[in-house]
Structure formats: C-alpha cells, structure tokens
Image (cartoon, rainbow over all chains, first blue to last red):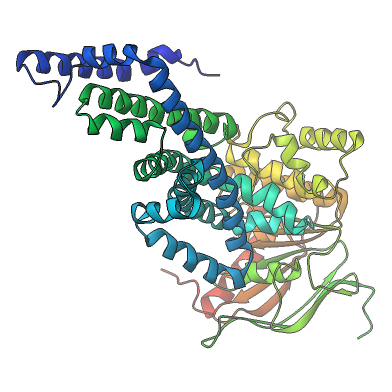
Length: 257
Length: 261
C-alpha cells in the first residue's frame, strides 16, 4: 500500500486558502469602513450567529432535512427511471422525452404552483429539490449503464446469467463511477431546490431566514444564513466524495487519489 | 453425409447480415464441421466477420440464414458447457481474481468450498498462485488474460471459444500463452474454436485453419495442419511450419489482403 498523507495534510492548502479569504474580507471591511448593511465583517457575522444560535441551527436543520429527503428520493427514483430507460426499448423514448420536457421547465417558475398544490409544509420544497436533482442522476446513470463493454454482458450471457443478474452483477457496478458523478451534482442541486422552495412560501428554513433578514435590512443575519448554506453545501459534497471512495475503491478516479 | 456423431459443432449455410434497409453482408455461406476434441483456428483480416462467427456459435448472436448445431442441438442462445475468452480479459475490477474466476459459477449459485479449492488450484496451475485476493488492476495484461482463461475453464466446459484472446498482448507474453493454451488442449482435449489474425499463431495451435476472406466474410480454404504434438516454440522455425505459413500468406496475397514489397 502506498503511504497516504494524513487527511489534515491533504486538506491543508484548501483550509489555508479559506482562512486567507476570511482575513482579507475582515481587512477590506475595516480599511474601507464599509457599512454593515452592505457587507458585514466576518467577526460581525460570527457575533450575529451567537446572538441566536438556536434560531439559525434550527432553520439550518430544516433545510438540511428537506435537502436530504429530496436527494434520497431523487436517488431512488432517478436510478429506477434510468434502469427502466435502459432496459425497455418501448419505454425509452416516452420516458426520456417526458424527463427532458420536465427539465426544460424553469423550476423557479414551478415553485409557486407546488405551494398551491401542497401548502407551505416541507412537501413542495422536497418536490422542487427532487425536480432539480433527479435529472442529473438519470442522465449519468443511463450513460453509465449504456457504457458497459458489450463483451462484459456477453461474458455474463455465456454464463447463462438471468437478466436481473446482468443488471445487478455487471451493469450497475460498472455504472457506479458514472452514477456517483451524477450524485455529486445532484446533492448540490437538491440544496438549491430546497432554498428555492423556501423562498416561495415557508415559515422556517434558511431560505425563510434569508428572506426575513432581507426584509429587516439585517444584512449580518442574512450573512449568517449564507455562511451556514455554504458550510452545508460543502459538507454534503464532501460526504458524497467519502461515500464514493468507500463504494468504488477499485475505480481509477478513486485509486489515483 | 452421415457424420452427425462425429461433428461436434456444425455450421451449415450460415449467413449474417447487419443493419436495416442498407444491409451489410458480414458472413456468407459458412459451412464448417468441427469434430469433438479438435482445435480449429479461424484466421482472417479485420472485417472478415470472424468474431461475429464466433458469437453466432456461442449463441450470443442470431444468424440471418443457416443453422448452427452443437452436440446435435440447434444453437438459439448460449448453451451449457461452453467457455469463452474475449479479446480483452473482461475481469470485473471490483472483484478479486478468485471472485472473478468464480463469477460464472456464482451466476448459477453453484459456489461450493470444493469449487473454491478448484479455482485456487487452477489459478496456481496458471502461475497465479498467491494472486487470488489481488484485484485485476494489480496484475499485468498477460496475467489478467490467464485469469480470464481460468474463469472460462473452471466449470470444465467441453467447448472453448476464444475470440482473439492474445491480440492485445506483447509478442513475448503471446508466445508464452500460446504454449500454455497448447498444453491445456493437450491435457483436456476440449473442442476449441480460436479466432486470430496471426498466421503463425493459427498454425502453431491448430489441427485445422479456416481461412476467411472479407467483405463479405466467406471461407476460402480449410487447411489441415499436420504437425506433431506437443509443439515447442522452436517448431515455428522448421521448414514444415514455414510451408504452412507461407501457403496461408499466399492465399491472403491472392485475395489482395496482404501485399508484398
């Protein structure tokens, strides 16, 4: 086994860059005496968070839940749809056309409609998260399932494999690298979907917190929500990368790291 | 002719077309009788449909006309007792070498401790002892193809189909594996159909060489190779071997497939 540099050493350049950006931000705000209504300094944002940590963390939790539920639903239905598209010639065209049509609708424009249909609970937000995230998963999964070497399938057929065995033992594992590419895009899109949903009609979540803060010209509070969103997005993406590393240690993209 | 018992695999009047309206004729009127325990090579340039012919024999593809029978049964799908080795090794990257070798057995839910032992023993015989728990990417191209041959032989099929198995390997590894295949055949007397575009590989390994023309693929000549076995690599430098390869080369020159200086 090659010796891996520790996690800290590997992430050090990224963390240093982030720290430098924060320091620069603080310096710019101080040197140019920028009004906190336009741009609060990082220190102010930090202090703002500690004024009402429960409020921010609660809303972050609401958004995170919607994002994760939307993402998981997208994974399940996205992969099912992709398998359906790949395995049935008759279903391929109609299902695909429907998906492309749905994806062409600006999701922001659908959000109000979903609120009309489902109220202001978590349901419309989850629906929008799914609408945004599912397309990436379907496209990448279909690509992965289709890119399997035909001789790989032939090998299984010579072994007199049943169709489900070909799917589970050959096609899906072969498609995993491609599926993960889709999942990494989808998790960020699910978060965006959740925020869009919250913008349109809600009484909780970071989207709601941002709108409230904006209404009161409370820019520091708005920034706290933004920073939490960034942290959440980065965390979710890193989580997906970790799952990918654990799931496909055999793939070149993972091996070379 | 009443030779049905003798002819293990019979290819009769096989034609294969591809495409819808503008059909391309890939194989034309292929007739071939293969006896039990015979080693046959199908030799031809790229585009002659030799791999297609093999896939038809394997039941992986249908024919547009004619029939193929194996052990007296018409082929309409992959039959039992058939092993196949592909151009590339087709090892599954997420499985260890042992798990790869056991793959086809696993498909039939027939993995037993005895089968595992058999797989390990076979890997050892192929010079892959100690590599059971390695992953395919940790092995060289030659070793990977050895593992894939192990996989094809594990269930002891009586028919072995090999689709240009050594085309992607370097010349030395190729020699090495040619000797290996000849040895296995000598020990097991399986009925082998071996696809290749190498004249010397075909002559070295085979009892019979089937020479194909291209566009469309059709049989030009079936040549019996009457050389003693076991065949050492040095056989390739003998006059007898030279006569066979030079004859085949001349056939390809007459067809305009090989051009001389």
